[in-house]
Length: 572
Image (cartoon, rainbow, N blue to C red; front, side):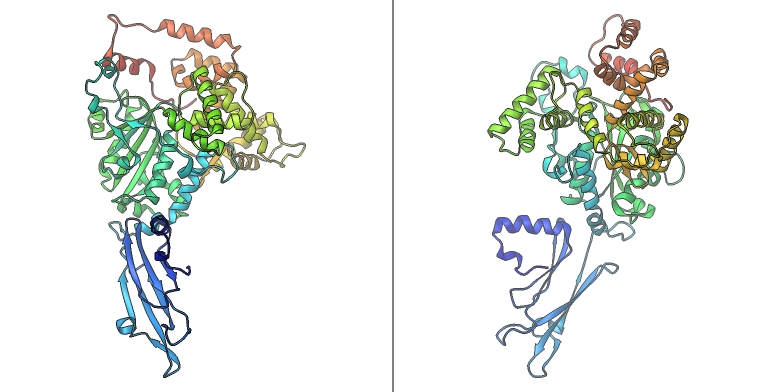
């Protein structure tokens, strides 16, 4: 409700303001014009009712009256009854001089699912929560409101993946087939999609961003965005609903139902697709085949294609659009530096920060991903940069900062100290690593209580989990809880392996040691004096049989996939 109508705004301001308001509201009430000409306007972000009103009584020179507006979301109609003051009878009656009959009705045609579900109203309902989840994901350890997804996220370059053999082609050959994609391209497409990227390339952040765009810049075919993890899909009734239930409840406060999942047009993002688990992939592809109302986006670590896939699954995946996430350009890193510096892109503060970031990336060999650049920028801003910055150091800085903010007063003897926090998180990391499916918060609390009892510690397990959620180390989605970032889980797992040599030696001696490559990467970065791992790693490398004759091109890629990538273990 406001005084002046939109046409009192500057033309450029009106375009921006009206579009933004249309994305959030369904009715606008204003005055100033001293007339009543109700209307209904439908745009790409949905419909909206416009109702003008004059004063109840100004002078006889103006329309004097009011309107009664009824929005019926069930029947998808809006009615506006105009009332006008009559000097003759000194009372209000139907404003037949302004509207024939004194009343007008509009169909209120929201986009609907097959069963009449009000999709646009639902998108408006879930929008604030999807935005909140995205904002929380990109904030690292910043205070609330400092960083927001739609303003600070810079999408990485998205292209058609290159196969190994493509690098052997002469320059210029098939260059027009490389293909670049925009976020809008992916959102407007009807095709299912596979998004590939190296670890920490920003895949999950990209999911958050695409989900936010789906509910703010609604595409030509509106769809409700939902999220699940690869192993959340399990056999049984309502497999899709069980996988997305927690996220659906979180964003809609329980308004999304299993029936809606069967009828509404959806986009389901499947995160953490594991290369090599062909059986689970086959099950997921069977669900995809039977869900005609759903567009699927699978997200996995990789470079050119999903590896270790059966011929049958590979045939099905050929119908998917495959997109690769590339490293950020220098101009993108400069924009991020400007945001953190609070300066113009070409400002002096931006130049200094940008040069510092690029210098450390060059010295450390770290990838130019949004995740790494954000960690470096956060470290610089908090004055924690040392001589050598690797990913483990960056993670240690931010985790120490977050744990320092955790408040806990549930101990009977003393405050829950830093060492105790780390011990609990290491235990949770190993526990969660052995459980590919998402776990409930109650399951985490139960495990923490069991761990504390084994250690003879008299702390309140539920308060500990709440504290780890409040400081940002853990994330709560509906009734589920997990590490906020997968890298946090891997960081604490590496610490557990250092403190539990028997577990470490068991992993190193088994054929499944490759499944801990990311944890070992952090292990060697954090604990550089550990020669044992380096010696064992050298033995593993020396034991790999090199094929004769030597392979190149696609044959090399297939061999690498077979030797290096193995299915995730169901238990740690």
